[in-house]
Image 1: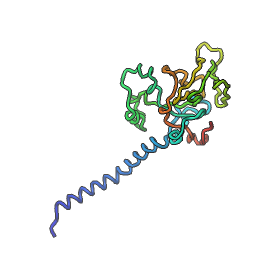
Image 2: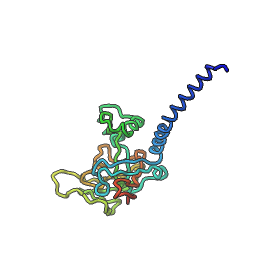
Image 3: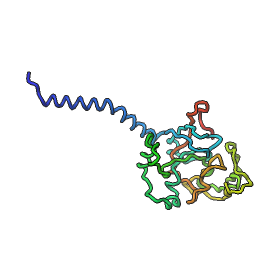
Length: 231
């Protein structure tokens, strides 16, 4: 029987393809699935600072879900993760010495493993976590301790344990009054004395709805504090 060289060549190519797909197919599918879930449904985030103490501690791991805020506006009291003010605050952007990274560049920079390379980091690609204290149309007054008066009524915030000291050499909590524009929210850290939040952003302090990544819903680490976040 004659050996057909073209058949042998096809078999060889097919063999190589199957071998390649067996190895890289599952990996590629896993990465695509991870990107899809992360972009549309939910993602894991960790707490890098003490701005949300005492409720959220440094290195807590959270699930940030994205579906609910695609269907409705954010609500007062919700804890949200959002894009860095360095990516949308006009005054902070004006102070940049290099071009603002695109969303695609940020997605690469913040991808696991790549995000560990310090030379690639950019503050515009960071994410922040804070609590919504006012929504569009709200009249807001914040006193020197960081306490809130919303639409003429004092707000009880049992999750805030660390207000600014009333007598301090440094103006840690500048008193302010503001009206939140439509399509925006005003966010504060629960640790009022140590949080870089809407009070301090130079461009006005309002967080646009479209800069919100999602709502922090579950803590999955550490195990002894696993559970749904209370609002």
